Length: 499
Image (cartoon, rainbow, N blue to C red; front, side, top):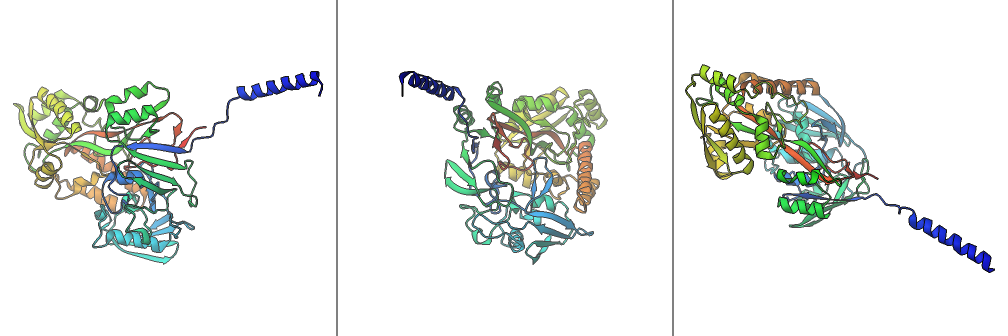
C-alpha cells in the first residue's frame, strides 16, 4: 500500500470512527421496575388474610379472578370471558378462557374455579371477605369451560366482589403454600421474598393474555416517608404509587425527572354520628353541621390539599360516582337557621371520640373550630385505635360523633346494615340497596348506586368529608400506572417505560 493511499485510508477510518463516536448510543428500553410500599404484607395469599398490602403486591400481577375491577371502578372480564345472569338473579353462568395455565404449569378450568369458590364459602374458610359471598349456595362445573354459580338470594354486586383480591383463582395443589410461594395465572410469577426488604416478580413466559412490557418488578418496603423520598431521589426506587407524606410532595412537583400523579382511592373519611340519639336523630341538625364545614379547607389543613371533597359515601374512583358536595354546601348562615328550627338556637354540645390517627386528629381540630363559629361546642376525646375505638364506637355505639376512614371498596351499603355503629334506619335507603342486589344488568346497578348516593347526601347520617388521595410519584417516562385506586392495588400489568 503506497503512502498516499494509506493516508487517505487512515483519514477515512478516523472520520468514520468519529462519526460513530458522535452518534448517540442506542438505548434499550428499560424493562425492570422498582416500587416502594409503606407496609410489608404478612403473607402473599389474599384469599387467606385481610391486610391490603397483600393485594397491593399480588392482585392482578400474580393472581387473577373470574372478573376484575379496572382503574375506573368498572367490572371487566378476566378469566371469565363472558357471563349471563338468569332473570331471577339466582344463577350466574360463566364462560371461561381456554388455554390458561397457572405458574406451576397446571391448567385453569371450571373445576379449579369451583374449588376456589367452594373454598371461599366453606364453613372452615379463613377468607377475609367470606361474608361478601354468603349468597352463593352451590357451584357446578358442567364442562371444562363453563362455571355455574347458584345463589340463595339475588346479589348483583357479587360480580363486583368476585373482582376482589379475596376471590382470585387458586390452583388446588398450591393453596396451602400461596402465603409464601404464590402461584397464580397472572402475567408475573413470584421470584423471591426477602423478608423485611422486598418481593420480586418476573414475567411469566407462558402467560395466556397480552405479555407485559416489564420483565422484572420489585416491591421494596419503606415505612418512613423521609426514606421514601430519599429512595426516589437517589434512584433506589422508580415509583411510589402511594406516597404517604403529602407535605413532601412539592419537592417532586418542581423536578422534570419526576411525575406527580394525583388520584382518588376507595377510602371515604367521614364523621359518623349516633343517629339513634339526640341531637343526631334530627336530620335538620345533621344537615346544619354538614353546612358548617368547609370540606376543601379541611382537606387543605389536614392533608396539604390532597384529597377530594365528597357529598356522600362514595369515592370518585367508584363507577357511578356523583359529585354531591353542592347538596349541602358550606353555608354557615343557613346552618344556624336550621339549628334554630330544630330547637338548638341557643347552642349545641356533644363529644367526638377521635381515634389516635393523625388524619383524624387534624380533621377533628379543624371541625371543632368551624363548629365553634356556629355556636356549636364539640369536645374532643382521644380514643386508642383500634382496641378502644372499636369497642366503644364500633361495637357498643357508645359515642356522639366520631371520625374514621372507611377503606373497604364500594361500602356504601354499610348504612343498610342493622345493627351498625351509625344506628341509621332509613327504609328508602334499605329498599334502594335491595334494588341494587336485584339488578340484572350493569346500568340498573349503577342507577341504584346513584340513587343511594343522593339519599345519603340529603339525609347525612354521617358528615361526608373527603376521599383519601392516591398520591403517585414516579420517574418521568414510566407509563401505564393507575391514577385512581378503586381497589387497594399496585397493578403494573400495563406499566412500561416510554422509548
